Length: 516
Image (cartoon, rainbow, N blue to C red; front, side, top):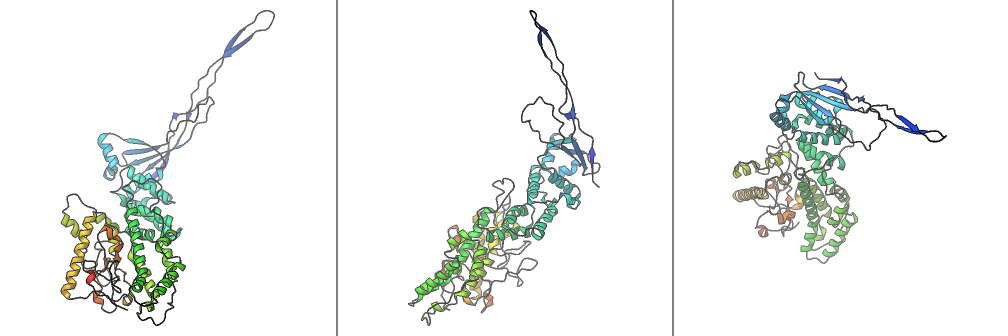
């Protein structure tokens, strides 16, 4: 049981009162009067009081943490007596052993001064969050009173700052994770909901407190629903190592742009390969319909709208070719269905960053490279979320990578090579008609895989220069669903219907094209 009580006033230097008297003599000449002046000085002493609060965190605690008022110099010297200043001093009675076990800061301090029984720290707006940390590491986060809940995200950032200052982080972030989750759910469920500002201020704390579900949700929202280059908004200056979100999220959003642009260009690719006289007019009218929605050219649209806004606009796409009876058939393709496929694949492309993949892909000192690669490789076809708390596709794995790019390339090359060997061994044909495929089913089970045991498949070109070729397969072929486990890929293939089904290898030019 913890108690808070007032402790006796401290006697501190303060302003006092004093009185002085002076005496003077005067001398005059003649028949006049004399005048004189007197001088005197006086000194006085006084004392002021400060109200203090003693909080017993650990009953029978053998150490005291005292938070004192910041020392400030007076703005100017004054000979006028000032009233005594009154400010709060906080004291926390804690356990030396608990502090030593949970804080590198206090552990080092006790090694240098083993007989120290109290420490005085300047209180720079840290009393609330320090008390949250002390209560949590001593008695659990459930003992933190409601009065110490974070009313604003700024208090969460203060807690992170205090944790870093006193060495509680990162090893013991789980101690106050329940306290953070109360604020997280209150903000999203009872507050303004998911907004760009909320996502920016909570994404980094989710990473600090290992909230994998919230982190994936917020990073996906940031990639699709923000258009600025600043993804993390903080109430303090973040160091280079702390800005881990900006790079992966920027890369992910860029690849989503390329994915959408490639999908929207697919009908144009067919028209460019056609030989009919009406193909040019149809191509112009198709682009004109996209321009009318404010979604084309895409590099201009992303300057004005977020990806979510662009996809919402594309949902209203309507276009009917003027040409009738086209001999090549390219002008009679289903343009609306093609745009619907583009919307669906763009939405499914990125599912957010995965904290488990980020932690697993960080190199460990002394770990063999083969072990590192094996640990980060998919254990069976298409499952890139093994040992992850929440299921996701390959693009989330790709952008959550924290290791060297060469290691990621080795894994993707190995996976693609094994997939090719399996198809060749089983005599599988590549492809499937683009207009005949169903959307990728990304519904995941509890263990993070799809209901059929295979996760969604995404093929990546591992070379940075070809980053715009990253594409996600639809995963299901309506005519021959045993093709659903095949990786697909590059955007630069010359095929028509296999524009999004081409295998990511050097033999893509040998593939046969199909006509709808």
